[in-house]
Amino acid sequence: MNETISLKFAKLSKNLKYEMLPENVIEQAKKCLLDFVGVAIAGKKCPLIDVLLSFGFQSKGDKNSTVIGREEPIYFLFGPLINGTIGHYIELDDGHRQSLSHRGTVVIPSALAMGEVLKSNGKDTCLCQLFGGSFLW
Image 1 (cartoon, helix red, strand yellow):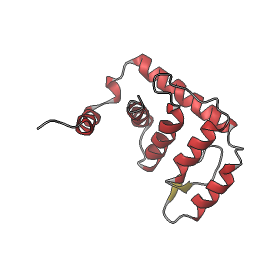
Image 2 (cartoon, rainbow, N blue to C red):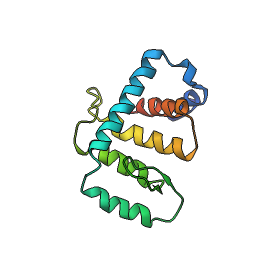
Image 3 (cartoon, rainbow, N blue to C red):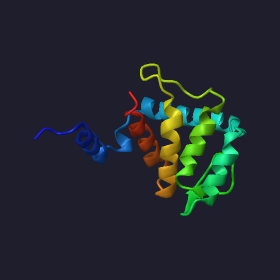
Image 4 (tube, rainbow, N blue to C red):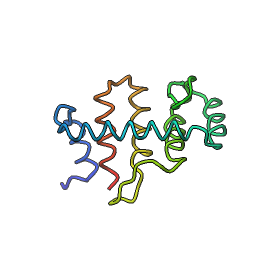
């Protein structure tokens, strides 16, 4: 039976460890994270945020996701949505020429939210960021 690409990625992710990453890849991931947080802080005044926050606070479920620049936690599914929105708002977020995408605003908010909910350490969250970014080619 031929393996699907999804199965191949699942097997790879199961065996992937932070210690396997080259130092230059780790350093670049850290720079991307800092870049994302910086543009998200600058974009936190986006007018759409109040609407999204309202929906997120009214949603049922655990409020266990952080919105950058806010103290009160929000429903898990809205954290990455809002962080991605503010990260892209001023359009200074990273760009990836080959995929014509802004990887950071897609992957980093999701990795941070998953890391927060699962109480992951920084290394596992970084690994999630890098692995998630590998799908955006």
